[in-house]
Image (tube, rainbow, N blue to C red):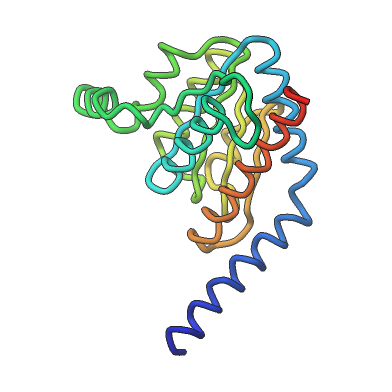
Length: 194
């Protein structure tokens, strides 16, 4: 396969994954958006977290909330827990990397806030600890996962929402997670700022 064929292959694989998700996930995405809208209407906030590419997605979501997605509107309360390098390195150094999000949720999370937890594998130990801490603090959890949902799928409780991109390809999962985040942002803006 030459370079041009490889590029076309990647585009087609991304389209195929997104199309499959577009058939199976709209109801779940809509439910997650409704959760977020209710949270924001009730003056609560959304905390997001992830590692690597998922950290970028967590940052992207928070930026779209705090600034704007497509509409001119007031900012909405969202914090990307992976944004503060001093806090991350301090917690990792003094405790462990598994605690970098959990300790922040303990400090910043309030009952009925939402944790948007992002992990392509569903097995990130620090994300699992974050979800466990969110449950102790009575936060709702919306998890973006991939593959079979990993350990996160069994860590979630009945009031949580998992949005799973059921493929084994990390790049395809990440590309679809970004589209899901854009869908959430679009629905939030449309409902809160008609």
